Image (cartoon, rainbow, N blue to C red; front, side):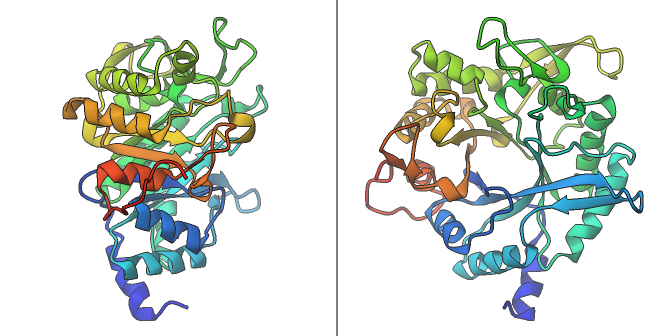
Length: 365
């Protein structure tokens, strides 16, 4: 049980700021709150945690906006108290969405949703520093959640602007096809397919999150964590064609930070024509995963030494601020259908130097 004094001090620390310098971020698994795993990840390098995940829905009995899901908030407070006692600066955000989760109910506008979320957040034992948007598609190809309606896109922008005005963090976690520097193509749908690349797969995006970044006021989103491990992502296509992982990461980061344009022809959206997309290095996070089980061969996997080479060989203006990984519970697990285990937190920290480093080989155990 946390003392009232520690809870009060933690509540004061929820200021909506990111740690200085490089970032190693990690998502929790769905509703997970494991103190041992989380403390290990933080000690080994993680300084931004995305707790997973809530939904913004209409209560069918009251017809009022309601927040559902998420981890045990008492457990989160306990874990955060333990991190604070270690003296390791760490930001904590709550994710909104996730695969198969409903998109926010657009009966209520973004400012209304922020007021509801902020009230909910302030009632927690320890408030979150902000929220991370991870709105994605649905296994049912015909689901309405395989479309970002214009109202939903505007809700995300307006709720995020309200959070920034209140001094809180707002971040984006797009699957790579939702934020794809290789194409100017854009639409609001999440059930696209590519006739030249796994045409049987009907869950690709077309720069929908790139539109969010372009349409929002500058500085609205503190971080953009691009999920390279999306099933049949552009990254996997390049790797399958033989490009080395470190070369891909370096060239992709350079291209993304140079900026690109998306061709918006949707008559229902306020932006039109070739719309520029620009992301600063200070907001850019490359998101990785362990490609476990059935994901092997369907999800891009990068070995930690490839990530390190790509980062260190790039001009500082053409590399990400840091990296994120899915998820904390998997750290130290076997990867990509091999017998080798990878510790992403430890290996990323060995060259980003977020925390004091250990002497042992951080990459593979």
